[in-house]
Amino acid sequence: MSLSEIIHWATPWEPLPWLIAVFALVAICYVCGLARRRRARDILPAIAFFIGLGAMYVVMQTYVDYYAQYMFFIHRGQHLILHHLGPFLIALSMPTAVLAAGAPGWVNRGTRFIGELPPVALVYRFLQHPLISALLFVGLIYFWLWPAVHFTAMLSARDYWVMNLSMAVDGLLFWWFMLDPRRPGTTRTTYSIGLRIIVLWAVMPPQIVLGAYIALADHTVYDVYAVCGRAFPISPIVDQQIGGLITWIPAAMMSVVATLALLRLAFVHEREAGNQTKANAGGPASLHPERSPT
Amino acid sequence: MIRIPFARSIALAVVAASLLLAGCGSDTPDYNAHDIQGVMPDLAFNLTDESGKPLDADDFAGDITLLFFGYTNCPDICPATMARIRAALGGLDTEQRKRFDVLFVSVDPERDTPERIERFTTSFGPDFVGATGTEEQLRALSKRYRVTYGYGEPNDSGFYLVSHSSAIFVFDPNGRVRLLVNQNESVDGLTQDLKTLLEHLDDTAPPAENA
Image (cartoon, rainbow over all chains, first blue to last red; front, side, top):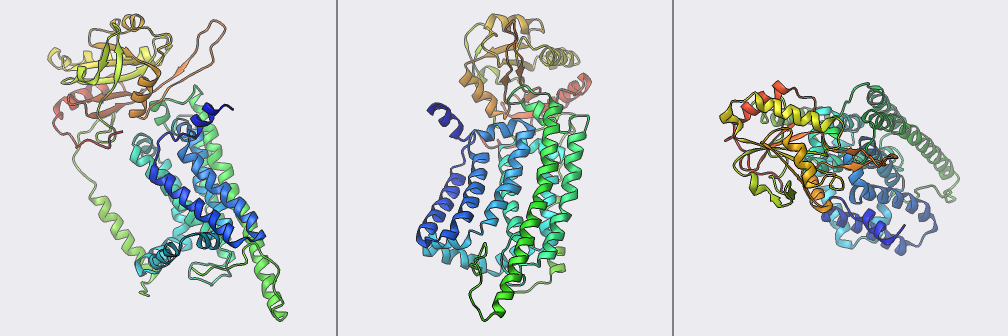
């Protein structure tokens, strides 16, 4: 790959300087946090964190975004990363402690202050309620894939970014709620593992139904890609079938993967509880030993 | 900490959402096409016309402009769309027709020379103007209206397909974007829309975000 090709691919199709700044600041804080803590057990979570963060950046602020705007199946791949894979990896890495160690003191104090403001705490608790969280997660997928809404979202520059960012933010909220490594009941939004698994399996069938509907439709469901032209000539129905399959299979698989992660977490909690009875002999290292207070 | 029971906070959210939705209704004219007023920036471009001279949006000021992206080797969509536009304009009376211009932008400058484009557009009538441009000019115009195009692999005789937007963009005499006409809209539907637009030329919204 030549230099000009690298520059071509790295250049955002629609640059959003503030978004690039947010990604850069988060990455810098995380690297500083890693450097200050110098703990070997940060390495695996750090890899997950950077893959998640990097993937979310690539699908929004590189030339990949061009293909996502003009190919339905690439758009579905983009949302799979923004709503499922990227936030899942970030939440799995539980980056709060590392970010807090790397961020300047005033940022930490400011974040804590804002987070503790009653209206903010209330909205957060509302959004993280299992029912609301599941409704939002599935509801947003359905909302943006509603043909009339999808049409305008792909035509209006503003709506397009509202769509992508709402998917990213909701993804982070959902997987944060799902993969919270603290013992259930530690905070008001740390729900029991069993309840979380029920939510994970509840969001699966609606995604399968929608994905299957799109993949198996014999007519064009989303005409906006014909209206706007495709990035390269491909049969509209093939584009739609692949897009439907991406909405259907990997998205639903994420619920299965997350279930495995939660079962492991339940096992870790159990083992820790067992170890505590052995006169606090220092439990074995879990994936997320530091239970950062939030 | 203030505690609001969960059920009550849901009720509040529902009330707030329904108030927001209620505020959205307004009496806009009923088009068969998509009313995209305010969604996209005003008409602006720099291209080359059929005689090789520079062409820009000022040349279309004062008329309703129908913009279509295509290429003259197009086997289906382009000639069919141009014929549909001709038929739809034919449904208007002579005075009304005078207010329309059709701008055909070729996104295949490699094969579409100005002469070739002229042959293509004149076959549809005097209201049809053809244009093309450099890769940079064409990208700027297509990106402005969030459309794109791409080239397929050439076959043995060098023929290749071009993927392009199938829609007609309609701009009012001030260059404001008004309608987006789908490929599956009927000729009668389009004629009806153009008449409705003529009646509602003055209901313009403030310009949208400019790219």
